[in-house]
Image (cartoon, rainbow, N blue to C red; front, top):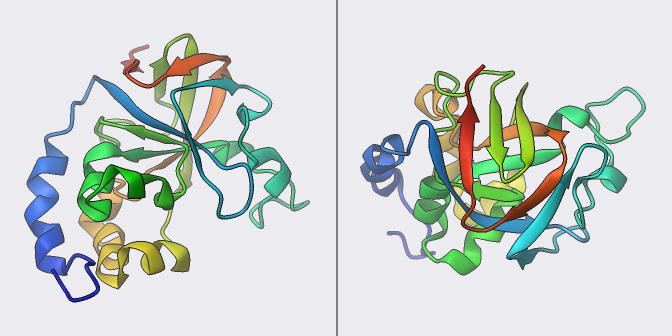
Length: 187
């Protein structure tokens, strides 16, 4: 590791095989993170996914988005999900996982091959649908995890595996709890 304790490209490449071994059909919900304000994170053991509000207690609805015509909330990016193995590699300690800014951390293969747009994940009684809109890294992500980490998730391999995570929308409301299985819904 470099002197700033951010991982190098070689460190990241060494962790890729472990990420690729993520479960494909079901994996545990490892963390729920509400964002009550800009750059604020609150880790909770239980939450509610809601078709209108996204993750209840999160500010998704009030933040708006530059990707919508009216600047309002983007329903295709209601709840973001990141792979637990990827964030464990980048953050190295669980207390740093919320820095990614994603509301849900799940140990499941988020690749487009495994979960194409329109695929669904059931967590408790709630159901999420994978959006076609890609979830990409930003300057804050690079600041928190390093420029090598941003390059790593942005490579063709990183994009195919969706290492930065996925955007989802809630299509069925319900309570969720850390430890619940996130299960791929087969139609």
